[in-house]
Image (cartoon, rainbow, N blue to C red; front, side, top):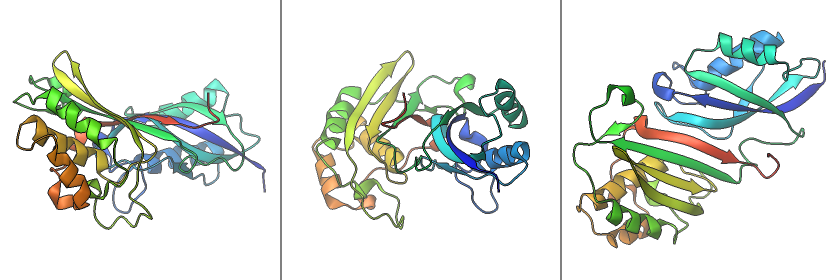
Length: 251
C-alpha cells in the first residue's frame, strides 16, 4: 500500500444548495462532493474529516478538513488544485493544501472558531440566501449589552439543539459583538467550540432584546435555566457564516 501524507485543506462554500458540510444519507453535502473529487483524482477512496459541521444552508468562508493522500501525488502542483476546483460545483472552492504532521486533527486541534451572522434591512436581490432581511431595525446598543453578558458564562445548554450527545455544553466565548454595516448589522462571535445550533439561537435571543421583548439582564435567566425553550427562536441559516478556524501550528 502506498504511503500516505496528511494535509489540511482550506475550503470555502456557499451552503445554500447543501445539507451542511457533513455526509448524511439521502442528502447532498459539501463533504460528499469534496471526497468524490479527491477520490477521482487520486484513483482511490479518499475521505476528509472536517473541523466541525455546518447546518443546512449555512455558509463557510473558511473551513478546514484533514485528509490523507498518497505521497506520490503532488497536491501543491497548481494543476491539481485547478483540476479539483474544475470538478467541483461553482459554489465550492478548495483554497489550499497544507502539509501537517500525521497526528494533526482538523476537529480536535482547533483552538478558536469564529462565525458571523448577517442581517440586512432593505430588499436586495444580491443578498438573497446570503443574509437575512429584517423589516424593523433592532436596538444594536441593547443587543451589545446583552452580548457582553455571554462572555461571563461557560455553560450554554440553553442555546444547544436537543439530543446532541455532547460530553459537555461548556464553551469559552471571547468575542460577541454586533457591528453596524451600510444597510445592516453583523454579529461576530468567537469561541473555542460551539454547540449545534448555538449561534443561530444566540442571535434569535439577542434580537428579542433588540426588539425590547426581553430586558438585557433577562439573558442571565435564560442562560442559568439551561433550558432551550427559554431562549429565542433560531434565526434562518442563510445569514450564518463560519469565517475562521485557528490552529496553533498553522501560520
